[in-house]
Length: 158
Image (cartoon, rainbow, N blue to C red; front, side, top):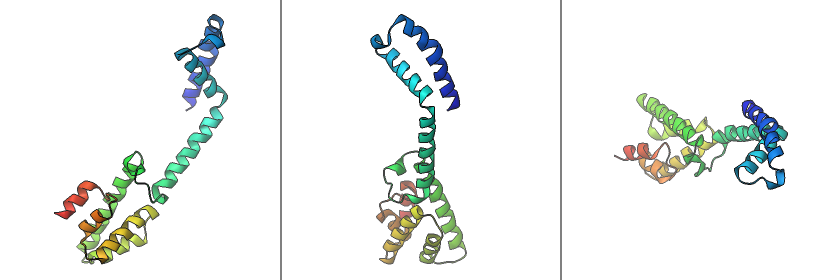
Protein backbone atom coordinates (compact mmCIF):
# COMPACT_ATOMS: atom_id res chain seq x y z
CA UNK A 1 0.00 0.00 0.00
CA UNK A 2 2.83 2.37 0.88
CA UNK A 3 4.58 1.69 -2.42
CA UNK A 4 1.38 2.38 -4.36
CA UNK A 5 0.87 5.70 -2.58
CA UNK A 6 4.52 6.59 -3.17
CA UNK A 7 4.23 5.77 -6.87
CA UNK A 8 1.02 7.79 -7.20
CA UNK A 9 2.70 10.66 -5.36
CA UNK A 10 5.55 10.56 -7.90
CA UNK A 11 3.06 10.43 -10.78
CA UNK A 12 1.11 13.33 -9.29
CA UNK A 13 4.17 15.54 -8.73
CA UNK A 14 6.24 14.66 -11.81
CA UNK A 15 4.06 13.36 -14.62
CA UNK A 16 0.77 15.13 -13.97
CA UNK A 17 2.47 18.45 -13.21
CA UNK A 18 4.30 18.35 -16.56
CA UNK A 19 1.22 17.22 -18.45
CA UNK A 20 -0.82 20.01 -16.84
CA UNK A 21 1.48 22.53 -18.52
CA UNK A 22 0.73 20.94 -21.90
CA UNK A 23 -3.00 20.24 -21.44
CA UNK A 24 -5.14 22.14 -18.97
CA UNK A 25 -7.05 20.15 -16.35
CA UNK A 26 -10.38 21.02 -17.97
CA UNK A 27 -9.29 19.67 -21.38
CA UNK A 28 -7.94 16.38 -20.06
CA UNK A 29 -10.05 13.40 -21.04
CA UNK A 30 -9.89 9.60 -21.20
CA UNK A 31 -6.94 7.80 -19.69
CA UNK A 32 -5.11 11.03 -18.80
CA UNK A 33 -8.08 12.33 -16.83
CA UNK A 34 -8.44 8.95 -15.08
CA UNK A 35 -4.72 8.83 -14.21
CA UNK A 36 -4.88 12.35 -12.83
CA UNK A 37 -7.96 11.65 -10.73
CA UNK A 38 -6.67 8.36 -9.33
CA UNK A 39 -3.22 9.69 -8.47
CA UNK A 40 -4.61 12.80 -6.77
CA UNK A 41 -7.09 10.71 -4.81
CA UNK A 42 -4.36 8.29 -3.70
CA UNK A 43 -2.07 11.14 -2.62
CA UNK A 44 -4.67 13.20 -0.80
CA UNK A 45 -6.80 10.42 0.69
CA UNK A 46 -4.29 7.66 1.43
CA UNK A 47 -5.42 7.64 5.07
CA UNK A 48 -8.99 6.95 3.97
CA UNK A 49 -7.88 4.05 1.76
CA UNK A 50 -5.78 2.64 4.60
CA UNK A 51 -8.72 2.87 7.00
CA UNK A 52 -11.03 1.22 4.45
CA UNK A 53 -8.55 -1.58 3.83
CA UNK A 54 -8.16 -2.13 7.56
CA UNK A 55 -11.95 -2.20 8.07
CA UNK A 56 -12.36 -4.66 5.18
CA UNK A 57 -9.64 -6.90 6.64
CA UNK A 58 -11.30 -6.90 10.08
CA UNK A 59 -14.66 -7.75 8.50
CA UNK A 60 -13.20 -10.61 6.48
CA UNK A 61 -11.45 -12.13 9.51
CA UNK A 62 -14.59 -11.76 11.64
CA UNK A 63 -16.86 -13.19 8.95
CA UNK A 64 -14.78 -16.35 8.53
CA UNK A 65 -16.07 -17.73 11.82
CA UNK A 66 -19.20 -15.72 12.67
CA UNK A 67 -21.11 -15.03 9.45
CA UNK A 68 -23.28 -18.12 9.31
CA UNK A 69 -25.49 -17.61 6.23
CA UNK A 70 -22.98 -16.77 3.53
CA UNK A 71 -23.94 -19.06 0.65
CA UNK A 72 -22.70 -16.74 -2.11
CA UNK A 73 -19.54 -15.71 -0.26
CA UNK A 74 -18.64 -19.37 0.35
CA UNK A 75 -17.83 -19.68 -3.35
CA UNK A 76 -15.40 -16.72 -3.31
CA UNK A 77 -11.94 -16.24 -1.89
CA UNK A 78 -11.04 -16.20 1.03
CA UNK A 79 -14.27 -17.79 2.33
CA UNK A 80 -14.02 -20.76 -0.02
CA UNK A 81 -10.60 -21.62 1.40
CA UNK A 82 -12.00 -21.35 4.92
CA UNK A 83 -14.82 -23.75 3.98
CA UNK A 84 -12.38 -26.30 2.61
CA UNK A 85 -10.10 -26.07 5.65
CA UNK A 86 -12.98 -26.42 8.11
CA UNK A 87 -14.38 -29.30 6.05
CA UNK A 88 -11.07 -31.14 6.17
CA UNK A 89 -10.80 -30.64 9.94
CA UNK A 90 -14.39 -31.80 10.38
CA UNK A 91 -13.81 -35.00 8.40
CA UNK A 92 -10.50 -35.73 10.15
CA UNK A 93 -12.11 -35.27 13.56
CA UNK A 94 -15.09 -37.45 12.61
CA UNK A 95 -12.69 -40.15 11.41
CA UNK A 96 -10.68 -39.99 14.64
CA UNK A 97 -13.81 -40.22 16.80
CA UNK A 98 -15.20 -43.13 14.76
CA UNK A 99 -11.89 -45.01 15.11
CA UNK A 100 -12.33 -45.08 18.89
CA UNK A 101 -15.84 -46.52 18.45
CA UNK A 102 -17.86 -43.42 19.24
CA UNK A 103 -21.24 -43.61 17.46
CA UNK A 104 -21.62 -41.30 14.44
CA UNK A 105 -24.44 -39.23 15.96
CA UNK A 106 -22.51 -38.69 19.19
CA UNK A 107 -19.31 -37.82 17.26
CA UNK A 108 -21.09 -35.20 15.15
CA UNK A 109 -22.77 -33.79 18.26
CA UNK A 110 -19.42 -33.59 20.11
CA UNK A 111 -17.87 -31.61 17.26
CA UNK A 112 -20.82 -29.20 17.23
CA UNK A 113 -20.32 -28.28 20.88
CA UNK A 114 -16.88 -26.70 20.53
CA UNK A 115 -16.80 -25.06 17.13
CA UNK A 116 -17.33 -21.75 15.39
CA UNK A 117 -20.86 -20.43 14.80
CA UNK A 118 -20.47 -21.06 11.04
CA UNK A 119 -19.60 -24.74 11.49
CA UNK A 120 -22.03 -25.15 14.38
CA UNK A 121 -24.93 -24.15 12.12
CA UNK A 122 -23.93 -26.76 9.53
CA UNK A 123 -23.44 -29.45 12.17
CA UNK A 124 -26.82 -28.67 13.77
CA UNK A 125 -28.54 -28.94 10.38
CA UNK A 126 -26.76 -32.26 9.79
CA UNK A 127 -27.85 -33.55 13.22
CA UNK A 128 -31.44 -32.53 12.43
CA UNK A 129 -31.48 -34.75 9.32
CA UNK A 130 -29.63 -37.57 11.11
CA UNK A 131 -32.33 -37.59 13.81
CA UNK A 132 -34.86 -38.16 11.05
CA UNK A 133 -33.06 -41.38 10.08
CA UNK A 134 -30.64 -40.25 7.37
CA UNK A 135 -27.03 -41.43 7.42
CA UNK A 136 -24.31 -38.78 7.71
CA UNK A 137 -23.65 -38.53 3.96
CA UNK A 138 -27.31 -38.07 3.11
CA UNK A 139 -27.77 -35.65 6.02
CA UNK A 140 -24.88 -33.51 4.78
CA UNK A 141 -26.38 -33.53 1.28
CA UNK A 142 -29.84 -32.67 2.63
CA UNK A 143 -28.54 -29.49 4.30
CA UNK A 144 -27.80 -28.11 0.79
CA UNK A 145 -24.77 -26.24 2.20
CA UNK A 146 -22.30 -28.27 0.12
CA UNK A 147 -20.32 -28.88 3.29
CA UNK A 148 -17.57 -30.17 3.51
CA UNK A 149 -17.67 -30.06 -0.32
CA UNK A 150 -19.87 -31.39 -3.11
CA UNK A 151 -17.29 -34.05 -3.99
CA UNK A 152 -16.95 -35.23 -0.39
CA UNK A 153 -20.70 -35.43 0.07
CA UNK A 154 -21.08 -37.37 -3.18
CA UNK A 155 -18.35 -39.80 -2.08
CA UNK A 156 -20.09 -40.30 1.26
CA UNK A 157 -23.31 -41.13 -0.58
CA UNK A 158 -21.73 -44.19 -2.25
